[in-house]
Length: 261
Length: 251
Image (cartoon, rainbow over all chains, first blue to last red; front, top):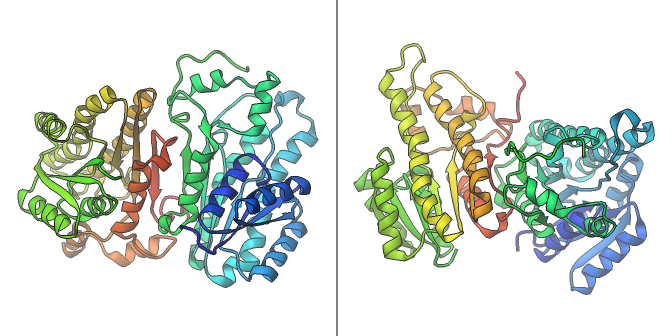
């Protein structure tokens, strides 16, 4: 077990990739803390893990509020006395033409996925990892953080910011034995995506055709990369952005169907 | 990795030998493909003495006929090759303006062309079989550069591009191509460089955010991860295992 008795916080772990990471960590022996904005969803996820015999709990968390991040850390420290791993996974996605992007849509995406990552990481570092002189953080970035995708300006800018933030903090906190890395998933099959497919809002074939590997990722394939980086197996890996994208980013797709979609 | 056949070039020493150990420990059959028969044989014997399954196979990666013949021989012998690690490397340090052209040619021949010849030879087998993983050992020196290493840098940058090009080209046919980019690791090669007065370890340590060199085992763990089924959606990607070396861009 790679994370035996480690205390791990996963933000936005009520569903999707975050839940997959939480489940993988729990299976590897971690005590998993699900930080969720939607508290019912967080509790349901923790219950699902506990029903499998794992150790898990849900705590309400709004990563855009530094005070909320601080309180979560305080509670975890009070109950467990340490935090070994943080996965900043919470995110949201709003598709908008940039010329029509309402200020609120821009701000909420930057707030959750860039500001929120900083606030949460700072809180965990202050409360636990710096005093412990030990810790591992994995930020969920995106292949969108490495290039231009029409109508995704806020999402992609936030994710690009996370990739560089990870590099900065990795170089700054290496002295405290804290490692920080990113995983950049390609398009991944989640419950949210299944719903979008049913509603006709997502087309898996289109994503699959754009991927050299010819298919979208399964949640477990993202979670296994996060686990590797979070664990001591990656003891010399820091400041890295690991693409788990089936070859998406380095491919100059000549079958491009035109843009914007 | 049980019963998987894993070929590692340049596995007679240094990083290659550490990779061989990691795969052997996980139950793979390791082929030590090495230009130097003395170190190659010794490495295979050592792996067997440690309880692993290993064989030595002579290979000069500069010669594409040798890599093709080795693939054919191993496929005849074992039926399949599951993982191929392009690790063979040389270090030729000289100021670019006075670098002997043979140093340039040798560096490109071993680390870039050699990696391609091997990938092509084993790639044909893996594509026909519809499965396989090629791991190319790149270097942070293929990403950020310093003096006296023009040939090494360019060869390794080429390896990173090769990983992307082959990764993209073969992804749809079951073959993953991935890379690992280590920073300075304390191997025999690095020790010789230091002893020759061409680099001091404390300089490298100071330049590294984690303030220490990586160990061969830490690089091996990344190679092993990428070669395995846990990395099934990772292709055309080179992972840095560098203690923060590339991320650090200040003073």
